[in-house]
Length: 455
Image 1: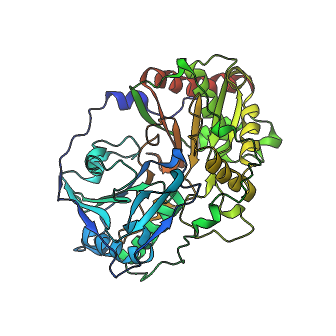
Image 2: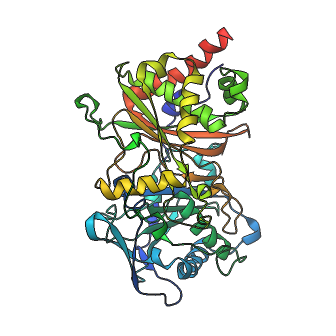
Image 3: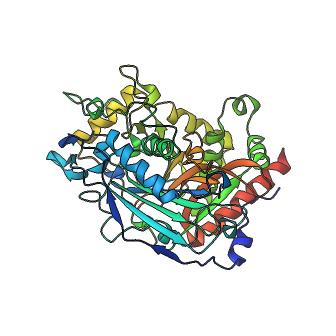
């Protein structure tokens, strides 16, 4: 079978060009006075790898039932009301003692941008997926705003479309919220905008003290995701390319058919697709077969805590344990080999694991995760961005705007999506050097064809 990534179609289609007219960015402060104080961020929040900005994008159709209602005004109002309950997000991140970070809760506000585009939603095509044309115009990021400190914690842009639909983009500072936390915040904004909430449906939980290093610190796991490696042959090229690959029911079933039945029954779709992408990626990058490669899976740890309920915690609360193996093994062993490595690594995350990471950060200078021959992956299929409803219905596409994170391009995202046939599936957002991307896409196809012929 052929993999449905439509690379040839994408490369031959003319680029979509349109104008976006933006108003001057404004700062939206909490609708009511909020405490002025300084709050310490956790040792999970402040690790080097999270000192980045992450963009989210949502596309909405015209909805005749709300004719005459302006999404810009509705969202701006809801934003101010929401910030009363999430007031630290209206402040500014500052440097703290010993390499830590704090938030100055000063009510400066989040950046809000009103815009209009001379395009309809239909002109984006039947299938919305990253990379999106003119993305830099759909989320304006003023010069210097990429810094983590002394800049707005959120940037939000609402762009009206000619058809009556709109695009909502949000960029969040990862040192103070993670994807789940950003979704919790956006859920409240959406609920207030459509008139069903007056306050959050759950009490926002700050409690960063729960994820500070222990006294005395004790690192109880071998955190291979933070090993500091050097490799002169692993310099990052500048010509990276972004693609989204759709895994529908047929593709997923074909990949699962490569696994023994007992493993297929117990492996999640995320584990199966991640393992398959890891193998194809490793082959495409043509690493030395004796050198180790890593796939680091981000695991939400909120449900792993037994000492406290962190359901409504909106700071970073996850681990990304590394599955590690020689490149030659990942490339040549049956797929089940990679699946079992992924499962074992993901299973390590617990309350103790997260505390161990916090202790490592505090005692080792908040190191960056391993970047040499590594890839990070996040499953966003259950977070719910596509379900965010500001009053115009659910998003046509909702979730991660680009692959990669900060200056590290090798971050893949799994995003729920629908193809042109109306089939539900998963988009895997990938960033690779341009010359490698073609090899990777071919590996996706060839692996299915070759292995299917042997089953």
